[in-house]
Image (cartoon, rainbow, N blue to C red; front, top):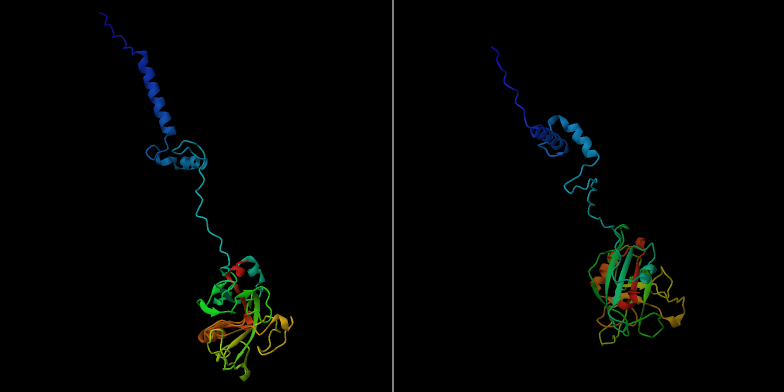
Length: 275
């Protein structure tokens, strides 16, 4: 008796194709997925190599991304004296490390202010070492060309090389000439007493020989160009051409001035100094 064997079950052709596609899909997914869940523990070296050539990021651009630039660091420049223009700054000697800036309120005004600056550290530039001091200048204001009797203070940059006065000097390294000839009397333009105005003076090197007593009367530019321009004690009104500060400020100035720092005065009305 013959036994018939069951015939083999034939699967439809599309089942094979579906299995092959599923296998291919799994293979492609495993190769292309860069997420942690798809990476096997033993593929770290391959992942590192892939990262080194730049795998496409979330945007899919496939280009290695450049690091964002850091914050821009500003270049530190030495501090300049404020409110001085390029021509005035250029007139300050390169070896000067002390500058007294006297700024007039207006070309025709007798009122001004003064600030002392130092340049002890070139990299930092000019630094103020005093507050703004009230001051007086000449009755008629300022001039770019001073003449005897014009009652104007000369605009410019001038050396400060010698001081003196009727009284003993405060503690100072600055050359100082104490002399009874610094006595003064009479009245100023507004009727104020002049006595004590020359208790302390600092000579401004306008039309004079630098480095000698303020009492020296030599005038290199000629007598007609005026002279005897000093910084002295304020008497409460305009001067004939000098700069005046209160007595306590004069003492402070004399205590601060250092001949080794080649001090100068920069003086003029505000508009002139901005040039």
